[in-house]
Image 1 (cartoon, rainbow, N blue to C red):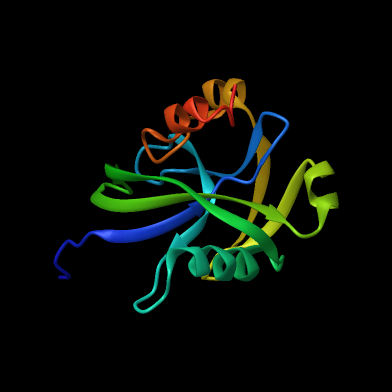
Image 2 (tube, rainbow, N blue to C red):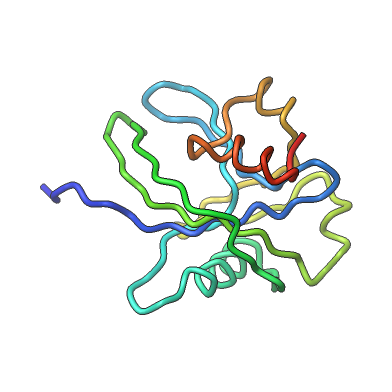
Length: 148
């Protein structure tokens, strides 16, 4: 059995007209629906900003520009019945293809090649669909005037 460890993640919130781009998914143990910005693990020797560009290219096949660090969150949580601990650097960036902001959703693929659909959501959507994770992200984005 692998010892628990802290994961280092970089997530990107791509904001547009009071909405951010999120992957909507369910916790397999509880069935709770969760919303999380795109991104993923930072690899050894990789800067978090570079991880964002790599992850977005891997997941959506899209280039991005102007990544800027918004802040860092520490997240303790339970997912799929297992405890987790993450240090999350939260970035904002812009898609090079401005037409992506006009689409209702973007189709992507996880690292295991399973498909997902990223959606543009606002604060009211999170109240209706499920919470924005990691915890503290919605407050951070409200304080930065990126979410209503």
